[in-house]
Amino acid sequence: MIEVHSMNQRQADVVIVGAGLAGLAAARALAAAGADVIVLEARERVGGRVYTRPASDGTLLDLGAQWIGPAQQRIAALAQAVGAATFPTYVDGLNIEYRDGQRATYAGAIPMNDPIAAMETIETLLELNLMAQDVPLDAPWTAARAAEWDAQTVASWMEAHVSSEIARMWLTLGVQAVFSAEPRDLSLLHFLLYVHSGGSLNELISVTRGAQEQRFREGAQSIAEKVAVALGDRVILNAPVHTISQDDRVVCVESDGVTVTGKRAIIAIPPTLAGRLRYRPALPAHRDQLTQRVPMGTVIKVHCLYAAPFWRGDGLSGQVASDSGIVRVTFDNSPASGSPGVLLSFIEGDEGRVWGRRGIDERRAAVLECLARYFGAKAGEPLEYVEQNWAEEEYTRGCYAGYLPPGVLSMYGDALREPIDRLHWAGTETATVWNGYMDGAVQSGERAAAEVLALL
Ligand SMILES: Cc1cc2nc3c(=O)[nH]c(=O)nc-3n(C[C@H](O)[C@H](O)[C@H](O)COP(=O)(O)OP(=O)(O)OC[C@H]3O[C@@H](n4cnc5c(N)ncnc54)[C@H](O)[C@@H]3O)c2cc1C
Image 1 (cartoon, rainbow, N blue to C red):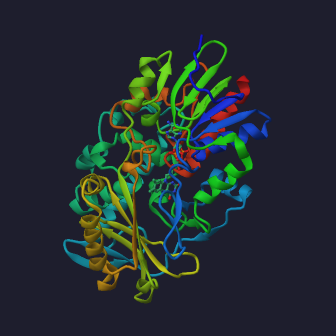
Image 2: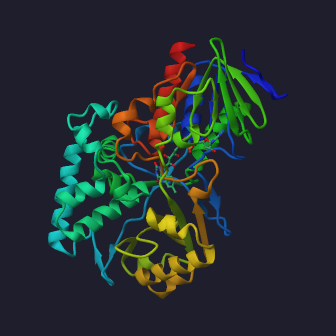
Image 3: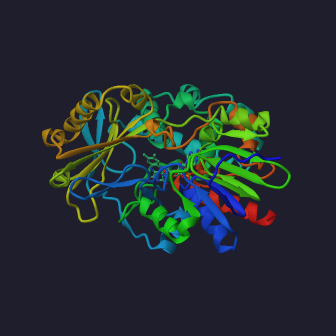
């Protein structure tokens, strides 16, 4: 018998925990099918890792997710359905390569100034793409070489297979940029699954024809907000869920504000946060041991605003690939109008771990010193500096997504999506396509909704 403690009680067919894109996509699909649904969201806003704020001049800044690529059909369909328009990421001009204290320029996705290293980088990308094709998206632990690949990290594989130190350094930068974690953190099997789920490494790291191709005119959070508006009072904000109980009749989801009883629940939050909820009865060891093993990446996303995108006049795209410094990857993040100029910098992986513990003034000075080195003195004097440290966020605890260290996928991977009686799991970490991306979040929500609908 379930004991309910909250005075504020509601009922629905399906209770959803989390109003990120996964939870909202699930709610939208369920509501469209006529199911009665309630979404409980911890924050005072919807969107989760999708979060758009205005700078002081009103320029919209995506402090979380922002890009969409041509192969990301689910988020594109959702954006189109709610009327969220896109525009192309600025790519004209040359990119900057900063290596061994020297600045050079290059065109394309991979720095080419050391031809031998560039050749080995390209060959390694091709080899990893081929290996990724051998990892089944829905059951990666069944890959012929799953045990071997899940027993090593991306770093140990690179040590054994990539001879050029410069190629290893660029590949490391690629891993940091895609996972906001270090090659030593990641299971090679998980890395290959992630690559396969997004098509290829080339698609993951590219702007043109890749995952960084387009941005949303009103910011990416506008998609979540538009979905939430259509759902109306089915979405309840400021309702952090802490306890989920189930018996053979119902599931009861208790939050700080309201308790909802339903037939099924969809938990659409990152696995590590799902592991912090209390379950009655307690979850099986297999599921709990999984959620003990899915850490989030570490990223601080920084926007610097200038009167104009002055680097464009210098024939530069605004993109940097660097071997050193707090910021190693940058993009031109100016609005579609091109005014003001906005440089986007990422502080990723170990840099995020080290610098996240320091004060904002020290961090800002280090970021601006890097930008001045890449783009000249003007870059060191922005009109405004805006940063978002995702590891500090109580209801996210890191980004871009949860990743898997060695051994987890082959031993616990089946617990990522497997329902436990009335509980179903969503969130981008459970996606089989574009895992870790907005597209994966939408797929996971729609998959969980279909699972539930089949059982209602
Ligand atoms: C800086 C950054 C850049 C990124 N860039 C891109 C990009 O360019 N393109 C791209 O496709 N993806 C990008 N991503 C990844 C993308 O944001 C995520 O894959 C996607 O938004 C995840 O959606 P989700 O619904 O699975 O999870 P979330 O967005 O994390 O949603 C979970 C929701 O649950 C809520 N919640 C948590 N705990 C509780 C609780 N106890 N009770 C109730 N509610 C709770 C949270 O507040 C949140 O709203 C980026 C992420 C970050 C942070």
